[in-house]
Length: 590
Image (tube, rainbow, N blue to C red; front, side):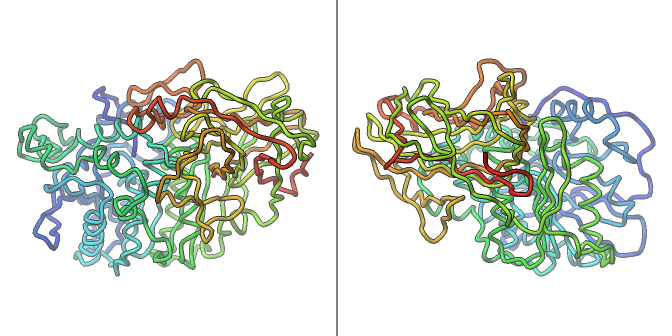
């Protein structure tokens, strides 16, 4: 799920494209219900059979990255002018592997327009069970082609990662392994409702993106760069027909405020996933491309699984040389059978974030076994964070739609690494029948300047974020643990105004090594965290710290309910705290 279509053109340095490659376009891939999906294949010009790297999604197999998503491409090539390596970029599409790098290495690259998108007809219903079945069929089609070795791997970013989790639960026989790179998993918790709060801004922009490449746009849609034909199919349908051929993505989500069958059908059952995989998460991808990659790694039943976590902008990391190297090494082992030592690779590969550089570190598990789970307590008396429970009870009140309250620690006594999932327990009351809690974990240097990082979308992403709607506070005892509370989101339990409730709030994982004398802070608000100024946009949305993952739908957050006054209680008897994953061999809790 990536940035919206940008009509600006971007020039790629022109060299001689890789010539020793067979390219076939608009190949028919039949589904069992009679619908024909369309695929492009790039494969070695040889009689030897090749393993297949497959993607299926709604971004248009004929939409060249540099043309259809120029804003994303321009940023990428300006930041990494040599990112193409040995490629001319002549066959790039958003979020998929580069044929000029993978075909010379002996792979066939197969791209399929998903049902209702691009050149493939049918009803557009993204991440549905129907699409998971279609991807199953595409894998099995690829596995029996005369040019295929019978081994199929999945590899892609965003949507092309999300649907990997779904199809893996169906066990297609030819699926050998997969690399879901920065892809959500839980449709409710990762994508549509953060802590039960509807993520409307991103979903509105994303819905417009998917609709802009819908099958049937014909001459009103983008042009297939290589076929010189409409990338959205040969027919040009009227608006009524187009609307009738899509599921009404946003409308359907708004109808389903709880985690019901609509969301569960689009969420993988990790207990059914057994295929080998490499799950790649982004530290700065709060709101979409982080939580699911951790959950997939920890919850799936695969015996051969790896977790890689990096920083940077989405989807830059997918195309970086070191990333391509690790992707290819993984596939060389599982798809080609090369004895390259991948099976001896530690299961967790982390990019550790320092305030001025990154370091790679390999680990044996996630969360790290040597984590010192440390509670830092909120103190309402002076809005501080303390390493011991404040001896006296206190409370602090704030306007739910105001700037909230920030609890800050004293300066750290020594260098401190905080790496892992986080959670908060807050004692809260509201003047109304509900309250939304937006938590932002932050850090500041000795001059008071905030520590932030280039995130997946936002250029100034804080260290971590978490959300919870108080009426969704019910936990699943079976699926919760202290560092990752798991809410059922199956019913609403309104608050009694003025009554105090215990709220356990999941805060998405973080990684940072802070120098001595730096401070940490927790900001609690009743609305999205946003800085006063911004430098960049995503799909027309100003990026002010929370990226495009904003929650301001008036139907979901009526002013009469969510503009009240919220109180946080602290100290003895009501010890609100933030649970920190402090890594013991780097530092001890101050």
